[in-house]
Length: 479
Image (cartoon, rainbow, N blue to C red; front, side, top):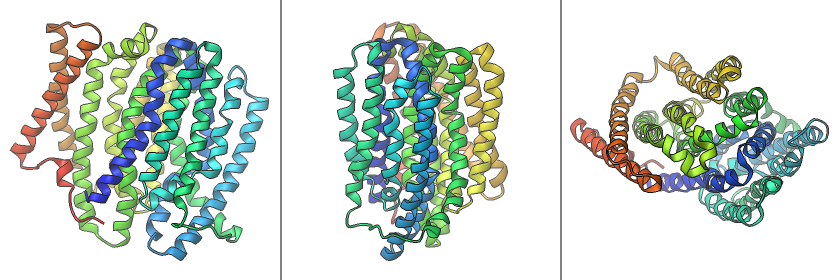
């Protein structure tokens, strides 16, 4: 990576991390304050709200980044593209907000008090400009401003949420944090891009390509958001509370993957525009090795300590979350593999149909497996559905791209890191049996042991193979 890319990756990791980590910091407190039913009810309301947010943004978080990245060197064209996209955003997000208000007033039931507070999530879609900042390679203001806002939100949770009846305050705090974060990031666009009214038809021409990407975004969230809705409907809020806290850890770790992918997409799109094909090929290969190294460590590491971590972190009431967390961790490997292909091959080349087919296939598989297994297996059925869905996405990508990409080399990377991860898993479990320390000291020892084993084995592999450290090898003169 170039210095600028490394900085952007660091800032975006921080941004994504704070987006999911601070709610995770408050999760042990909230779990002990409102219990499994409260966590499940909030999860149900938030995930329905998030579906409306996705509709309001209409795939703009992918399409907008790419559109801005490809024209950012032309100020006049940039201003016109930005203006057209924002006008489209205002129309779609405004209509979605009206539908959300109708849902809150006419449909919401037990979750209504929480849903009212989450209205600010839909309002924030009117002024969300992350897509423009990322397309301009401006990740620093997003990271710094959101870090401040979300830190203040976390402090408010500890100050004002004291009993189960305060759950609506928790919803209001995080909803307002999203709104204020978006408003603060608007300031960073001054002097870099300007709004000038353009004909409505110019805005409308972006709806179709945005809608194509939205289908994929919605499909992804069918098995990341609808899981919780289905668990609540078919197994109850308590089971959803267990699943929510198990999935929360995995979602936090996947933030690293999406953060790196978000930085790489505008970069590769810009390289694609300049015709630097061979450079892109090397970039993808090194990125795949680096991402697989990271996600395999996360997957096997979480699986090894999940049983001890869940009751310590969330409380004894959430012990079963550890059983759910262990298999869920392996979705990280599939997510990482698919993310590299999506952000560095499919989207920069405007081959959106591949993205659509792969994630829609995953969504269909997820819904089928969930419907079959949740009634009998409850939250564990949702885990199986998620595993099947996440596996489907890279498999469909392979079927569509197998003649163009060196999948044999990518799978060799995956196999080698999986063997290293398995050795780490066995080492951690061995320490757990030989030195049965209880509580956080035992968990810390297991984590340290796993890190040492994985790092040493990776260093040995890189030295023997002559490959070198993937992160260092991505250094170059990329602009």
